[in-house]
Image (cartoon, rainbow, N blue to C red):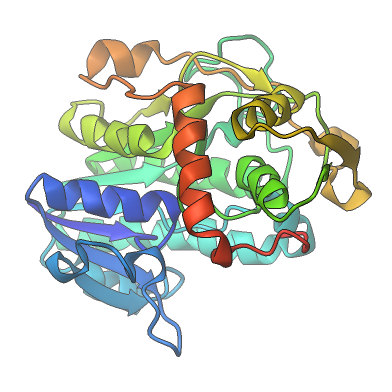
Length: 322
């Protein structure tokens, strides 16, 4: 199968690229055009010679159309995802997450692609109104980021209903693991510890998250692609919640360090924007695909810590990564 993966140079995208190569797919990686011709996390991938890399911009219909031509399936992961930056520039998220998704859907429709997988997020649910959160949970845009992802999901569903497009919506809960940027809480904590800090700067400690190791998330994409779950969303998560405070304690225990935490105002979301609780109902993916996660939070954190020790030069622990 000839597959296009957008956002291929990123955290989850690069892992998905490698998994698709392992499965013997013909992989075209769509990365954000840049003057240095950097391939992001694919730069040092052991599989870089087994993929076709195309530079472009998901906001540009012409480059999206060109990238889609000749493909059978597209995994659309390209997005702006940092929630704090969405407070600074909501328009950037509208252009990338909404218009970018439109470009993928429209190009795929016009070219007759056999399958389109759109990446959603658990942030579309907002703070849990009940747990575990299934795919029917109400959608609440508590940040500009989540609002644009809700919109993108709705556009994707409309293409399924209006044009009989073979669309699937993949909705991961919080993914973590090697290659994640310090915008996320886990690499932020680990990088600060590796940088020698004993007082860790964080935001709120009470919100809970449902954490999935990145290779398990990538495998979820693969299993959803194999399924017949067209025109609907499918959660990827562990059906387990853990608070930010407990994540700090768990990381400290694994790394065998004693640390304290301090709350920095710039790291705290506005009160009405904070998602206080996320816990995934993963019964659909477990019952309707062959997906089975290979890691729990302890084994996943150990792998993440070891990778970050070896790749610490990528991080700036003294600088808040918006």
